[in-house]
Length: 87
Image (cartoon, rainbow, N blue to C red; front, side, top):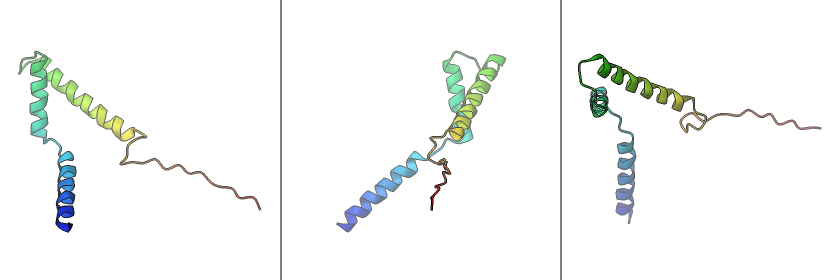
């Protein structure tokens, strides 16, 4: 029974780690290039460069919005509310 519990715990831990995987800068650039080509832009011209820049700026704006969000579980808000006790 303990072996089964360990196996399930290890599988759950592996799933958590897999969810935390981020793209490398090279993978992100390749994905952005593919997205711009899908939009119909051709590499090595100003419109393609503008598309790449817009995707990067949108990603940065999303990151800022997540960091500034009050609902972000990594940065919980602390509310200070003093309790006054009358004697």
